Length: 594
Image (cartoon, rainbow, N blue to C red; front, side, top):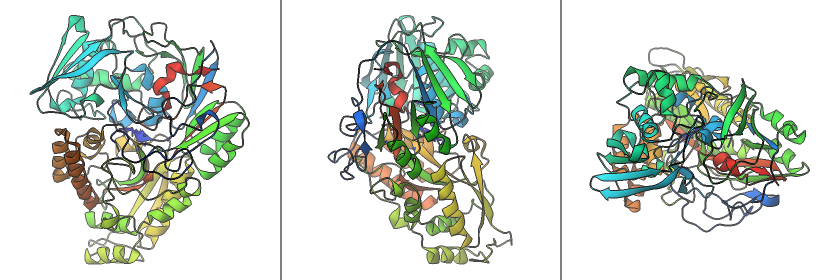
């Protein structure tokens, strides 16, 4: 899961194939599309998370009902597409927790091969450019056999093979490289053995315990032969190379195993790419140049689109942006939904926020309906508070476990009573702990993000009524998640079709994305039990039990399922919304000018 900085997020953000991404443009993990009938574009009804409240124009008009095929067309050779992203680059290793950011994965994720790729319909499919097959051949012990295409190579001609699988597995299992800070350990920590054969083109994985979401493993694989030259792939050298891959722009030989290579990076401005001459995939890129333009100030996205400085943008929508973009000639847009959700998250390492009573009181005082009215409710029809840390509305398994907890209700009276009963003084005026310390902390949000600024402003005004002083702080790249330099932060998780693995990544203390250091062994046990089951009814029951416990921790407050917003000139084809950790660039090799 990736952080939308997406566990592709995330990190607000944060992207690995199975990962949570923290998101900025358009975050927990989720299962393939759930129950309910599609309601049609712009209908605002139905149970499918992709269609309720969606709206598309031009060839995006049927993206809700034909998510994998809308805006499909034939391209001509040549041309440049400049695509706007909203975050600066904190690091280049998407499998490293501090750099697991959705916007960065949009720009470089296609350089690093993934066994499975999540599609716009929220379902994973085998990457047939890279793989001949990936199949479970035995259940006891669970055994997975991966067969890699003979012609799959890195851009320096080195074969993509077992060494690349092993490098990611060793960096991510939590034991071989304990200081690597992998973005997820889900699945990797359960590997009993990983062996290569057939010249490294066949990989056989045997699990210690069954892992139901095995298709989510081995996403965004980095070149092991490059790592071997810059520290090594074992022992202390593994950490050295893992960090080297994060610090260095992937312009070195062998950096790309995808359809494009990076030709130039201008810090905090743009990432420029050109077709990879060694690309082995079925569809060869038609574009001469692909540019990912970094625009961190949302107020500058519309002018850049209108003036033709960018031809497409995948933005975190606000009312002004949606209204303005709709009126631009030759531009089409799609307001969508998917596996992305906004939330407030505490850092329990903060001296005050280590107290669950204080956290509970704060979340009880916050009114999610007021937040929605100030933000996404202005342009997304029917936006409602999200009731789960695990599923989004419309998915099989979704259940509102948050409302019953009282968190997000805006009940100031109840919040004050919680604080008074816990021994706090100055409730409603100047809150102090039993030791007499004045309670104060920061609310951090993405710079230039209007909605997140408004969320922190609502929190600031609300907590003043409890006697808590809140200062607002901006972040350009959500690197605070990795460093731990935050108290209360607003960002989004960008999910994958693998709900249990995503939960392992976020809610296990050593899962890779538990930035706030919440420790709940009982919730972890339920999630891990679900990971070994193939009975979906049992999985959903266990995950909802875990969700109830996560609510009780008052560690993370779900706000709403986040709308996505894609705008592009109507001469660009094969570009479409993909509200998973892969984002619209999941099929970047097919993008072109018609």
